[in-house]
Image (cartoon, rainbow, N blue to C red; front, side, top):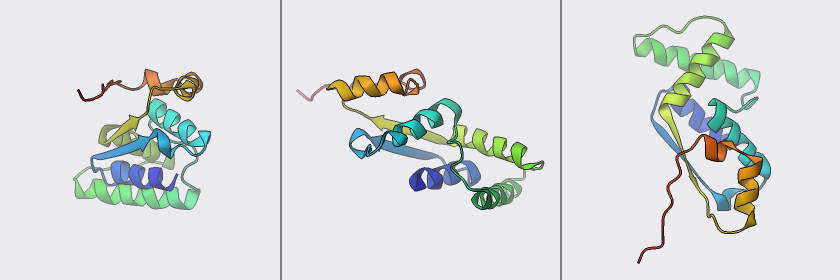
Length: 127
């Protein structure tokens, strides 16, 4: 979750193009896939930022927007919506899963955004 926070701040608040690569060997708990599923579907992970951190992120967003000559004002909800939109534009997620075995099929059934919100590239073994 800390890695996702850093990437969201980089993409959404600092407006840097970012790629998050996630391999199936990194799945230690199903909550990892739950967060990735939600991120793919909505562009955010619910409750990832505590209120103090959310305020800090909004200040970074406001400062960055002023440097770009834009104005982001409003309440926290409007600013967070602008943050999520910037995340959607600036971040790409690369998932590297092996299709072999029952675990892959189970994960796809449990987390449908892994299929519905992605472009699938099948890579074959090098001849």
